[in-house]
Amino acid sequence: MRGSLPANLRDVLPRAELDVEAALEKVRPICDAVRHRGAAAVRELTARFDGVEVQQARVPREAIQAALRELRPEVVAALEEAIRRTRLVHRDQRRADVTTRVVPGGTVTERWVPVDRVGLYVPGGRAVYPSSVVMNVVPAQEAGVESLAVASPPQADNGGLPHPTILAACALLGVDEVYSVGGAQAVAMFAYGTEECPAVGMVTGPGNIWVAAAKRLLKGRIGIDSEAGPTEIAILADETADPVHVASDLISQAEHDVIAAAVLVTDSLRLAEAVEKELPAQVGVTKHAQRITEALGGRQSGIVLVDSIDDGLKVVDAYAAEHLEIQTADAAAVAARVRNAGAIFVGPYAPVSLGDYLAGSNHVLPTGGCACHSSGLSVQSFLRGIHVVDYTREALAEAAGHVTVLADAEDLPAHGAAIRARFDWQVPSRNEAQ
Image (cartoon, rainbow, N blue to C red):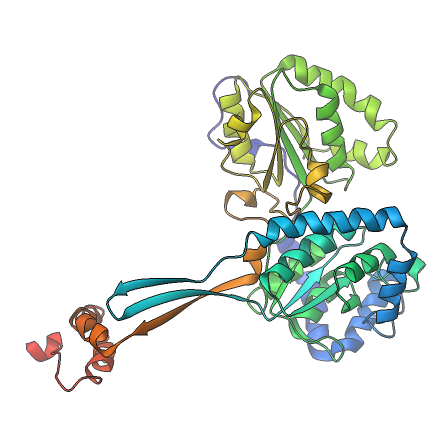
């Protein structure tokens, strides 16, 4: 992209394609089955899609506690530290109620009220994600949500239960309502409720295309955080960046999935060439080399050359990455100019891997360019703002004339009549005045 940048910048940048719309018609009968036949449909769909016969979707409390007892001590310690750091950050996000005195005797208070009950989805595909348990549960708890349920796909190797590390993470967080259910049927179970699982008001958490499609289909009946797509990393770097660092960070996100996106944006041809040379050497010694090679070679990944860091900023703002690393001279100043990103990682010692686990930030972030209008998961995601209006008789009287005029201007005279009914005197409507 040397030279002038194209006007349709967002459309020409590499990005994974995820056709959620096409998946809608396939998940619709799944959701309808759960709606009409409840737990029986969930069991049948679990056997069909996961190849596991589960007689009872809810995981016994003892199994959750046993998973924690059997988890290696070093993993327990790492999860505990992740929980501690994540709770520190999210506790500071809690909003306070604010009362505004509009006029003497007239106030509006904005109360922040948590959702009553939420369903938290934790994927279980190519990797195990106890970190996603932490990232979903902690902000919900800090928001004050009273009822939390977790769903995660059953594992044949674990007796039809979710992965034991996921169960152990739930135990550490005090969550004992966990279901061995994955995919679209898990979202439908949360949305409609079954004999085993009461319905929820909101569903959050990442998942595959079927989870994203079910969230889109059922949005409105439930609140959702986002329709999570393939994970993505963009790195804005200049000649000061270390190609070893850049390559390793691109690889770290490509490790998630063959459709994961890894994009380097740089004004340095020397860095681009060094990274291209470094990638095969590092990929060759990784566990998931085939998966990473496919992701890095896909049309969703690549290197974008620009004339300057200013142009690079335009590119990354158009891309609106889930994860954006800034590896440039004066990285903090460059990062401060970014407008569109799910999360920004500043300098050589704040890689995305840190944010995935232990930075304290949340890793449930908008994908597919949605960071230009949406935020990552936070305490605010689980709060609703309710305006409480409190006016005295005198304060209403002072506003009455303006209210009736505006009601008449909108041809809604009953609105004005509702004001006049509260007083012995009459505020004439425009029609009466005529």
